[in-house]
Structure formats: structure tokens, C-alpha cells
View (cartoon, rainbow, N blue to C red):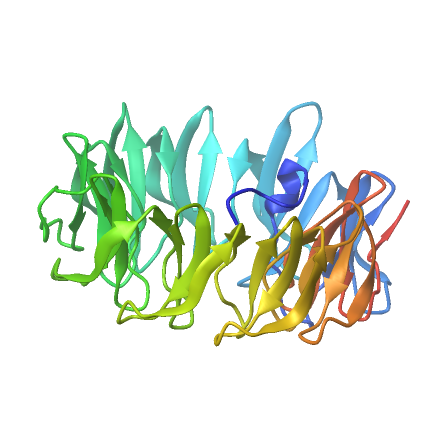
Length: 354
């Protein structure tokens, strides 16, 4: 859907969770630590925020008075002492961090892989990380080698071996060696997904293959990337879905849609949201005021304000009682309750005490 449906604090974008055996982030009052599944504290409540574990480390925040971010292991040992102003969770053994106003990338030991000298850095994707300085963009490898010099006006992450970049105000694609594999002929170019990428020429959008051949003609107002074999497309202010041949599987008729996940897509019509399957059949009636994508069998949805979680049949698994909610990952979902962040599991166990 075009607009966000959940109001959520900035810290609550830290949604990525760990496996069930890892300690679980637990908040008591204003302090965070970690507990086990019985809610017994196993890492002391001394942080001002904590994310779930990912790749064996959890991001933790201390504020006294300035924000300092670091990483702990499952024993509570500070693997990377809190020192960064901003940071993200580890992906592929690497994490972007910011110190003294400059971004770089570290490994799990805290070793600096990409120097802290950039205005922006992205997460490592397919072994490559986008960096930016003074309005120009380039790419580092995961080994810390600058392989694509900073010469582009914008760049997105690599996907399926190619990255969209801007040169002279037009979009094109480069490969991991920095070779420009397409002309800079697009007003917009999205990342590749399932073998195709959405691009814009003139006032219309379509899809191209990695060689630049037009597979689905430029005729749409807008479109989303392919997911589970279908892509959302907009025509005359109405949304539907096409397959990879361009066939309209779901004719445009909805006010907004989300991409398919777990075989279902959230759709909106006449101010109400529900879910369709990949044939276009409505499987969960359009009855919600907001509806998110499914992940791990559940989706956030709300009626009349509060948000909870439903399953693939529309059964309410976690009651509509939160002010904000994210997606489930490894059995936990972030929520906002009483203006404060916390985590809930699929059994509706809430990991906090006010």
C-alpha cells in the first residue's frame, strides 16, 4: 500500500528477531534486558532499548545522556561496547554503524571493515554495500574493498547481481564489477526480483529482464516488484496484479494493495481492507481499517483503531489492543502498548512489565 498503516516509534523499526533459544528482549518500566521463555531475566535490565538477537548478537542502546549503541552476545558480554550514535543489526556478519557523524561498517569483533567516513552506508546485500559521500554513491565489497568508485548520484542495493544507479539524472544498472550493463534511459529503476525489474520511461512503468529487454510493456501508472510470481500494477488509479507474461491475473479495481506473501495479499476497497489469494478470490473479507502483510502465518490488522494479529483464515490470534505493530520474525513481533515498545510472541505472551 502506498502509505504506512502503523504508527510506530523510530526504535521500533528494529524488528529482526532471533531463534527461540536465544534470550528474548524484555522491558521492565524504562529499562531493557533479556529473559528466557519463562520470562526469567537472564541478562540484566540495564539498557534503554534492546533488539532481538541476530546472528548471535543483539543491538543494545544506552542513553546517558547521549545515545550509545553496541552489541552483546547471548551471555550478555559486550562483544562491541556501546559507542555508536546509530547502528543496525548484523547481516552476513556485518553491520552499518555511525560515529562522530560518519558511517561505516564493522564486523562482529568490532573491526572496521568500511571506514567511518561516509554520509550514508547501506546493509550488505549479495556481498556488496552502497556508500555515499558528498552526494555521490559507490560500492564496497564485504571484504572492505571499494570496487565501484563514488560517481553515481543515487544507488540502491544489489539484487540478483545488479544494482540500480543514477547518472546524469537517469537510472540504469551496474554489475558487481561496476560495469554499466544498461543504458541510463530510465526515469526510475527498481531492484530486480524474480528475474524482472520495474522501470519507468516517460510517464509509464513496465518490467525489463537483466538484459534490458522489455518483458511487460510500459503502460502502468506505477508498479511494485514481483513477489510470489505476481506484481502489483496501477492503472487509472486502481490496483491489480499481473503475472510475468503481463497477463492481468487480478484486474485493477482496488484503492491500494500490498505484495503477495504466503499466498495472500492485502487489498483495500471502499476504505476497508482484506486479503485475496493469487487467483483474485477474496479469502478474508474486506472488514479491517488496516491490514499488513503475512509473515510466519500471521498478519497485523486492526478494526476501529487498535491493532492485533490474524491468521490465514482471518481468525484473531492476538486481540486488537495495540497502538502499533510490526511483522512476526522468528516467533516475535514488535508492538506499541501504552506508548511503549515491547515484543509479543504467537501465544500472546507479552515480554514486558510496566
